[in-house]
Length: 565
Ligand SMILES: *[C@@H]1O[C@H](CO)[C@@H](O)[C@H](O)[C@H]1NC(C)=O
Ligand SMILES: *[C@@H]1O[C@H](CO)[C@@H](O)[C@H](O)[C@H]1NC(C)=O
Ligand SMILES: *[C@@H]1O[C@H](CO)[C@@H](O)[C@H](O)[C@H]1NC(C)=O
Ligand SMILES: *[C@@H]1O[C@H](CO)[C@@H](O)[C@H](O)[C@H]1NC(C)=O
Ligand SMILES: *[C@@H]1O[C@H](CO)[C@@H](O)[C@H](O)[C@H]1NC(C)=O
Ligand SMILES: *[C@@H]1O[C@H](CO)[C@@H](O)[C@H](O)[C@H]1NC(C)=O
Image (spheres, rainbow, N blue to C red):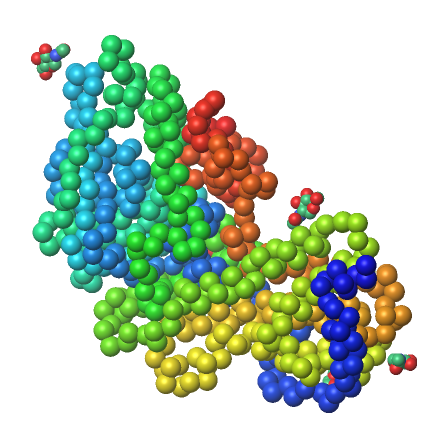
């Protein structure tokens, strides 16, 4: 079979391709910023980081991977949303307390006053929001009490003006001070994430916006499970500190596996929110988002990121004046009533971009890395066709090399600049082009717009460049050049260049959708990223737990999932 037939191209299409007028006037190039397909993004750009953090909001997986959150986002919890609170009596808390969105996550806190009974129950309150709650979301693993990596930097800077490593586990002060700080803005609570999402609620009284739906005295996990009737009481789960100050919940030494499984269920429940759209019980207002990756707001963080990997991006070196600017912007966002924003659904718009490119880039990466039985020409043609398919909505009829001569055009790809520009600008052209709409954008929306533009600009630059190289090498199914002018050695070097470009682009985008267990986990397993407070191999070389990598873990016996490997 002819390799092009493999690609599903009919002879008619080929004929049409051949018959297309190959000599056309150069396409207009209206905008000078679309001149250089070789211009790589500035290393200090953060558009890709803003893009990825925003696209990861409310999702457990990416925020477990990168615990160091960089955003603070006003949000709403709609009326009639259930929240759970485990405690040792049936009373509503009189002080700010933690609630969870899933009962699996409140279970470990469900308890009872100490008794000398062999079996006790434990108290779990189910609350329901009686009005929309105004909350503030800290992204990342913002409820993880880890000294390293800065998961709590943003909230600590907000309330304490500094990141004090000694206060890493100062949770009572943290919740009290957050609630005190937010009082003047009418904030009801704070959304954070650890094994699962939690909402710190400031007020459980009748003004607080929650009502008690049920106070249940549940079959207790430690007493009943660890000590069935007639058996001696087993020691409770042991909470310990590892030498680095990382809190571990050690397996219950005298217990039964089900106790571990019940605690493990917090991780399982968190995994329900792993991927887009995440935990939809909270509605974010992106038009009032504050990002520490916004270089116009916090330029002092640029040098501290220089040469650092993303895991190590911290906020604690922010300058005093930048912190004032951040707090001022946040306070404006929380108080301004006159600017409701443009109405653009940024979350969806961002996700459209991820949908359009995530699996296609992954497929290209696979094709570039596989050596199947096809020869290099045939494989290259398959990839070139994929590139054309990805760019198809943006390739004008007139876009083709001028003149059609591989040896003279390969050094000049300006004919493809309009493809790059259309691909990169189509999703936001309307916003840029309508002054009324543009004037409605809040400061936060301008940040979102710029990040989206920077991200699509780079995606489209690389894809267009790759496609152009393929065209010049005579690989494109619809622009036929003289095949004799493209020796195999040349094809090989085109493929090598493609491989590098895809790798660099995917590294730059760094989307967590590409981070998965390979091969896929079995039905008895769960794909897992090291999650506070359970770190697998925490003593492994190079502090691997600080750079979470996915692995399959067992969901139940023969050994408990929570045992440190
Ligand atoms: C339990 O403790 C109470 C006092 O708190 C005592 O009166 C009672 O005898 C104890 N019961 C058992 C079974 O030890
Ligand atoms: C990036 O930021 C660093 C630190 O501020 C600066 O030294 C460097 O010149 C910047 N790089 C570019 C390309 O602007
Ligand atoms: C950031 O601050 C820490 C102390 O808080 C200091 O050790 C470190 O050198 C600073 N890093 C930069 C890049 O300024
Ligand atoms: C490339 O292929 C090799 C061998 O099949 C594999 O080990 C590696 O993980 C692949 N890399 C990517 C990025 O898919
Ligand atoms: C392509 O350009 C080269 C260099 O200018 C020239 O030698 C060659 O004849 C041209 N080929 C065709 C098919 O026009
Ligand atoms: C590439 O081609 C364009 C349009 O044909 C032309 O304006 C430009 O000067 C060329 N660039 C180079 C480096 O030859």
